Image 1: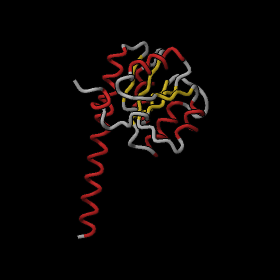
Image 2: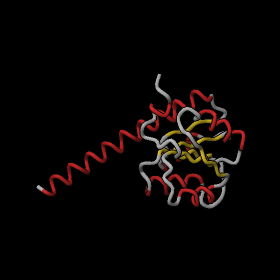
Image 3: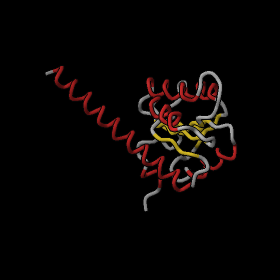
Image 4: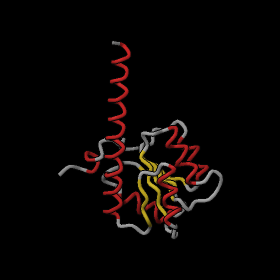
Length: 154
């Protein structure tokens, strides 16, 4: 059987950032991703995430949507999607969010939304699914760009 790392080919093994103030969930996320990602970095605030994401090659960012501050979690997602479209973004929350609030996470650019508590096996499966979608999207975008460049030089 393939390891999770082999299955999640679009992710660099050391590239996950978890943005969550609840250390129990950070531990649960690390445990859920142990087969897929060699190292999971964690920060406890959106402002810390902004700092860590500057110049780093994280390919997966998991953000607790209930973290407050300025910028907000949704602001971080919007900025990531605009500047780093190759990043897989998963939002989580242990608080009850309305359908409108969850929809705003997706509209900002989140690839997935997972409610806490979660089952580790399901969490890992959702990460793999998101990374496959992001990888396919980026491959299609690269192919499209390559075709345009070929036409421009012809």
